Structures are given as C-alpha cells and as structure tokens.
Length: 191
Figure 1 (cartoon, rainbow, N blue to C red):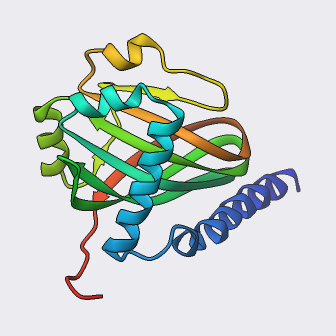
Figure 2 (spheres, one colour; figure 1 turned 180 degrees about the vertical axis):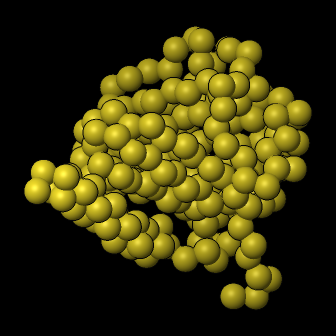
C-alpha cells in the first residue's frame, strides 16, 4: 500500500506539472515576432530602469538573449517554458524558446524574466551555432529581487556569459536538480 501511495503521489505531481505547463503557451503568448519584440523591449526597459548597472553590462556584451517571461511549476516533478529574442547590436536576429525540467523536493509556481549576456564574441558564436544550448559552468548567474543591487563582480567579471533573473512573481519552494535548454525557434515569414 505504501509503495502505491508514493507512486501515485509522484505520478500526480508529474501529471499536475504537465497540465500547468501545457498552459504556458497561452501564458507566454504566441510566437509572432512583433509581439515577442515588444515584450523584449518592455523587459529591457524594466531591467535598465530598475538595475541601471545592467546598461554597462549590455554595452560590453556581444549579444543578449532576452526571455521576457519564464513560467515554472512543480510538485515533485516540474518544468518551465519561455520565449524570447536574441539581440545583437540592439536588433533581434533570432528567436528562441527555453525549456526546463527538474525533479526534487518542490512545490509551487513562479514567473520571472531572464536575460543572458554574451560577453565574448566566441560565447555568442557558440550559442548561435549550437542546436539546443544548455547552461553550463561557464555562466555567471545573478538573481535580483526587490531592493537588491548589482555587485561589482557581476558587472566586471570575466565569465563569457552572465545570466540575470529578475521580476519574480509567485512562490516555489524546495531544492531541485534542473536543466535549462535554449532552442532556436523556426518562425514562418508570414503569420
């Protein structure tokens, strides 16, 4: 009986996460480039307005991947989804989606904005050439919430990629083992 209960609990967590994430397409909007670009513009304006030091980070980066909204949910098993644009020289050159899968002790849901700053041309080229790039050890991560400021290590580090997370809403508790994957979207010319 105990094994059945644990298995049922795990399966219900997986099923619940799948149901929540199936709605992410509606939450994150459709894939029309003009809509994604408008969301990217608004996200960058918010980030630069709240965290002024990100302007210098943006100025010295070769490109930025901006995901305006990532939605995550989990109950034992979980995941997340978001869409955004790769900006090079202030112009959207490609569109990407991000997916996350995780498992562990967790419950809840949250949403946040995510920006990857590619500091070197090599890091940007590697990202663009890959078929499904994943976050790795070479990424400097910074999470900013209400009232926090950027540290000098974030704005002057030597990491080839800097990841910024901000604008968090919702609550997700627990420790997870997770992976984040970025994949190029194929958007038809006419929608």
